[in-house]
Length: 388
Image (cartoon, rainbow, N blue to C red; front, side):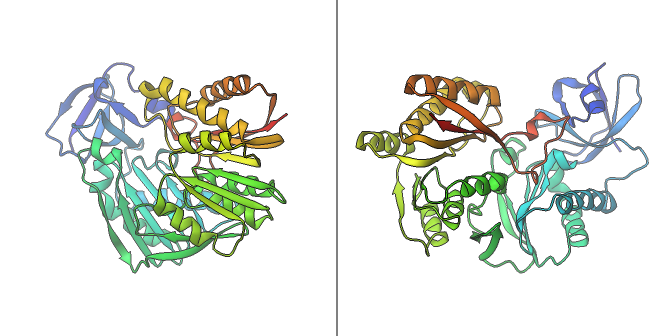
């Protein structure tokens, strides 16, 4: 097995639990390792510190996997990781059969995302190493996850591009239907397993349930509604009405299907910045306003521009919220911290000329655990505020 040697003191992050070794940390390589293969990693004293996936074409040259020299990165190793991940989800009593089963570095499987929808799994491998080891991963999932009927791969996104990988999709095991129905609390969703998107983000589960519980007898505004998750929870909990806004007609069509049995549901297609301004001009207001914009800051370089956009969205959201009403704002951009989002919120409240209090700080659902050593695994943050 090829060896890689790390510069002095550059292994400290790994000793603390962070698995990324950037190319700048590498002193030398012995042998001719194949991209995506498992290699032995040593510190500058030539002491073994672990095994990792190697990719010379990635800025993250090594993604560390294991510290124990006596273990092999094989089917048994993957089975152990899958078993641990499944045990955690069983422990936290998730009120849904749709949840994140494996959350990459948080579950010691960097480059792997696995979502569970009933008896089916959707797998995403975003690194070359995990692409090479995919057979181990699939066999481990089949072995450790009970009542599994099918596995579908949906490996796509910027991560694969950075690793030099094409996007791939298809059935990896069993038979996978185009659509299934799942439950989340009292709500039921239609999930398109093979489509471009599943139509379901389990990281917002707790927030959807919370916002639904606050919406009885209220008029609910769902901005960047996607396939209607927040609105469905609002209507299930007895909201008077719900208005959904999204730029995509395709996702609004899925939302229509999810909300088909409810009356007083309005769908608006359009750019949220334009639609929100138009609604303000019309003088419309709602009791509960939910703002869930897409990722506005892919990296720190985009932060200033993103914060201006967040402030604009929040400002118009405040204007659309009745006095005494509730407004929630989220950011799924890893580059945006809670402090950043709170600053944008503070400026928006000031410019709106209102008073507001933070009722609750919002986070990703616990099926998306946050590694203490890998801050990048915490990406979703938000605030629930009351307009006074």
